[in-house]
Image (cartoon, rainbow over all chains, first blue to last red; front, side, top):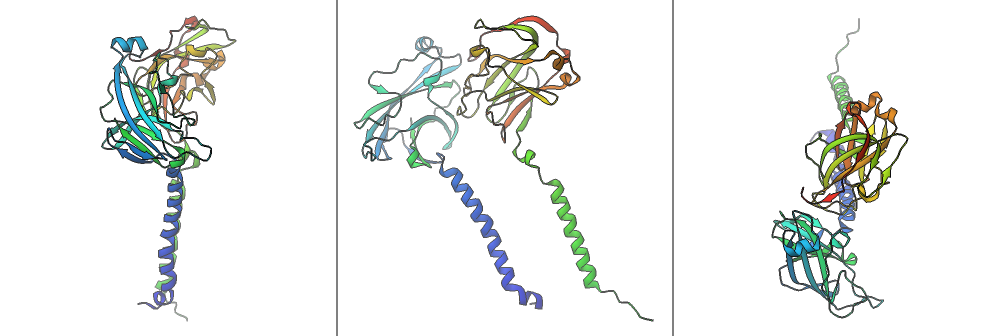
Length: 183
Length: 197
C-alpha cells in the first residue's frame, strides 16, 4: 500500500460509506414521505371475497355495465361511446372510532393491467347524467352508519375499457394502504 | 549555472486540476435551470391533429375571430376588443382527479390570455375532463384587436394542460397565426357535447 493511502485509509473509507448513505437516507425519506400520504400500497382482494380493513369488513356485492347504446343507457343520458359501471359494495362497520363513527372512504374504479392500475375514474355523481340510485343504498361511505350498509358507486367509462376492473377503497387513516376489490 | 529539473509530479497535479476545472465547467453549463427542471413538458401539436400528453388528449379543429359572440346558452359577448374562438375536443387519459381543464391559454408575444369563463357552460373552459370521453366545444379568449394584429399575433400559441399548475406535466402547445384570420362580425357557437362525435 502506498504511504499516502496507508495514512488516509480511514478517511477514505468514511467518505466511501457516508456519502452513499447520506444520499440514500435523504432519497428514502423523500420517497417515503411522498408515497406515505398517497394510496400507493394496494391490498388486493379477489372477486367475491370480504376484506377486513380499517376496522370494518368490505365486499363487492355486485356490478353492472350499462352501455350508452342500450335503452337504459339512453334514458340515463350517457354520452356516446360510453358505459355506466355500477358497483354495489357492502360495508360492515366493526370497530368505531372515538366519536362512535365508522370509516369514511374514497371510492374509485381502476382499470388494471398486470396488477397495475392504468386508468382510474371517480364517482359519476357530479356528471351530467340522470341515474337513479337503488333504494336503500348510500352513494358514499357514511360515518354515521354503524350497522352494515350498501354503497352504490357509478362510473362513466369509455367502451374500450377492459374487463379487469377493481374498486379501490381509500381510508385516510390507513394510507398508504388501500383496498383493491376485484369486480 | 543552475540546472532546472522538471518535476513530473507537479505537472501531473496541474493537469489534474485543469481536468477537474473543465469537468466542473461542463457540469455547470449543462445543469438544467430551475425553469427547465420545473417547467411544463411541451407537447407540440397542430391544428386539426390530435395531440396527446400524459393525461390529456386534445384536438383543435378551428380558430376564428369575431367582434361579438353569441353562445349556445344565449350569452352574448360584447367586447371592446375581439373574441378568439377555438373549437376544441379535450379528454383525460389516465385519471380525472383534476376537476376542470385547468390551463387553457392563448399566448401572444409576452402576454398570455386565459380562456374566458364569462360564457358559463357554453364553453369547455370549466367542464370536467373525462377519461376517454371527450368534451367538444368552444373556448373563448377576449383580446384587444391591436394584439391580434400585432407582429406577435402571427406566432401566437394555444396552450392546453390538465392542471392549472403546469409544472412537470404535459402542456399541449398549438401554433396559431392570428394575423391570417379574418375578423368576422359575429360568431354563434355550438353547445359543448360530451361523448364521441
